[in-house]
Amino acid sequence: MLENPLNSKDYIQKWHTTFHPYFNRYSCIEEYCKQQLMEMSTLIDTISSENFWEVFPYLLGIDARLALLGELIDLLKDDQLGLGSKELIELVEKDYPCYTKELCGYNLNSKTNYSLIFQVK
Image (cartoon, rainbow, N blue to C red; front, side, top):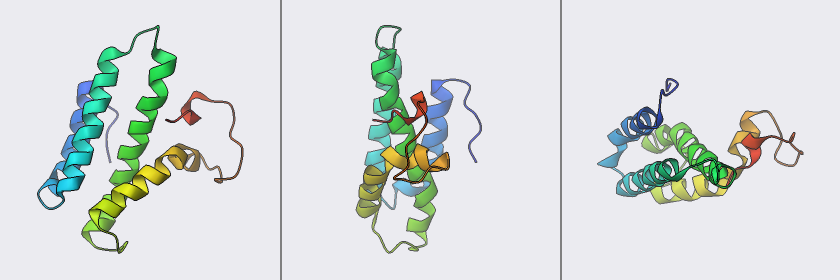
């Protein structure tokens, strides 16, 4: 389980460390993870009080993608899903907008409370 990061560098490093063991076997996982982490880093570097409300939903989206991939990647290794790495990424891309909603105990078709954490992009 990942510890709470102290800063963005720690956050990005923890995810890189989590996914790195899969990079040799699944090159598309490596590419996807590196792209997500680079985008996260870029967004963090550009965030300001003027653009916070615009940027934050994208940070939540990247976080949801990484968290969902982190939950599913061991199933790929053990071939429990019957999916390849590209299909797993497609599944993550399809499901990440609802990931936080499900974590909070909401059904996909139920309305959420008004909260910043559900503004995932």
